[in-house]
Image (tube, rainbow, N blue to C red; front, side, top):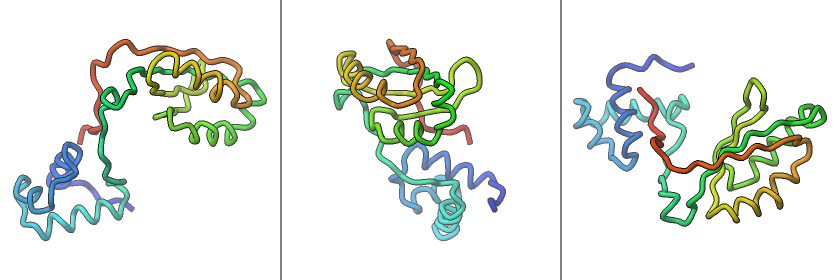
Amino acid sequence: MHSELDAYDRKILALLQEDASLSSAQIAEQVGLSQSPCWRRIQRMKEEGIIRGQVTLLDRKKIGLNTQIFAEIKLNAHGRSNFTEFTEAIRGFPEVLECYVLMGAVDFMLRIVAADIEAYERFFFEKLSLVPGIQEVNSIVALSEIKSTTSLPV
């Protein structure tokens, strides 16, 4: 069971979302707590699953992943009955950063990164289009990025 988040918890979470490398002493100073209670709050939020992990965020373009594609996937009737098979296949593709189940005209939305359009074309023909149950894929190429954040509004 999750405890209620108070103002200190929210400040701690906001700071950690911006820079997870901050020490508990640095966080404590910025939120107005002593180090021990601040550390205990962070540990509690980790134990409760509010803080799921700490990662290093990379600039995709600086590592050569210049193209971002959003793919709308529609499954055929057989594909819908093998939902687990489809989701396991998608989870196995490192190019797919996000996958959402949708309500409406399409079944899934994928966010995919690739070096360029040719790399996406290879991914599409050699991997994605071979997943059983896919009826239709509509690929949408992102031209530029206006906003991208991992920070939730706490």
